[in-house]
Length: 292
Image (cartoon, rainbow, N blue to C red):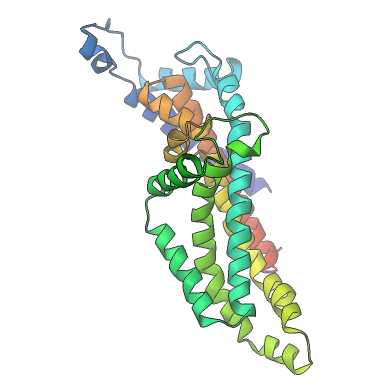
């Protein structure tokens, strides 16, 4: 436990240095933003890195992250968008994992080589297709043609608004999970243990739906935890296409508008989130392997 605390503190110091440096370096010269309108910006005195770093921590601890370029508190700005991103992340995980497990187990249950190849082909096709193309195709089919889902936006707690962006993000989870599950499930189906169960007249549905499923579940859960961290950090492309008010769109806005305080805090948020969920995945792996 003590070593884990020190590990986190080392990581936090390194992450804060990078966040402070990157945000200040990126927003150092804003003059080009005003070039098209013929405006000039008054030069400001440059601060050394130590002063900037200390001011960064002061903002994080005592000033709610400071103020955005629009005058809103950074923490409030991020908190208002976290719930929508969390809603989208949960939907995407459920969509991707349910389809990945369902189709992969069905391919084994029906013992169909064609079914197996179709699932594998669809997974590879999705991963080889840029996500913005998937998002645009979803808009064309479900909004423009069928008119069954809105083109974007969000209402708190309303899943109707997360279906299209959730499918776009969930399709990647489905593809990655399927490419892991298909060979693992096949390997388990051909194992000595499964052959023993068959000789003892266990139903094939029980073997596939319970025994094989439980065998591949632990590693799949670890992969889902890592995907969850990525989703909670926001998906800039998808959120921008569906003008979804989440963390990804906020990160894009902070980069585009050169909002120093917001960008630095978002970098800290994303880094800590990735670290925590990766450590959870690490301990889950140890737990399932009998290490703890």
